[in-house]
Image 1: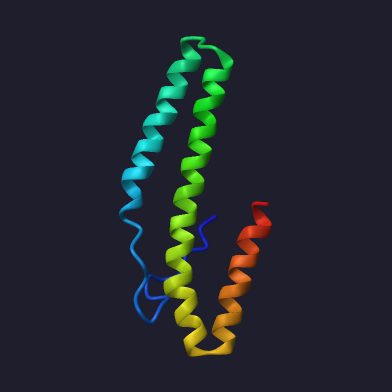
Image 2: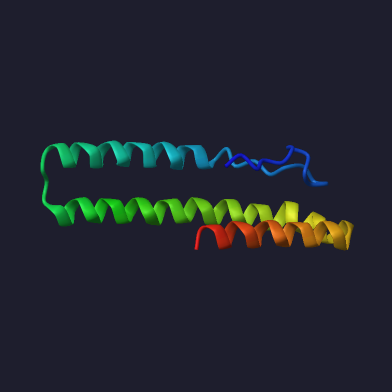
Amino acid sequence: MNDSKNTDCCQSGHPSHQNECKNLNRLSGQIEGIKKMIEERRYCPEIITQLRAIQAATKSIESNILERHLKSCVQDAFKSSSEESESKIEELIKIFKRYN
């Protein structure tokens, strides 16, 4: 799962996703809450509602990171060379094919 590139993948510098940590911490708390709901044998639709909220929050974080990637790494690749831009496009296609 670790296909990470070096942090200097962009001419403008790799974007920071640090502000997503608070959102991830919130998700972690929500997951713990769901575990507690299950242990307490709460009503199924209440648990499902919380699970759906986590999915929505995860998609939001993903969207934010994708937007920063497109506006920095991908945009820089298109400015530099067609080979590099093609590589960035293929990278994104692989990710979306893998998880769809």
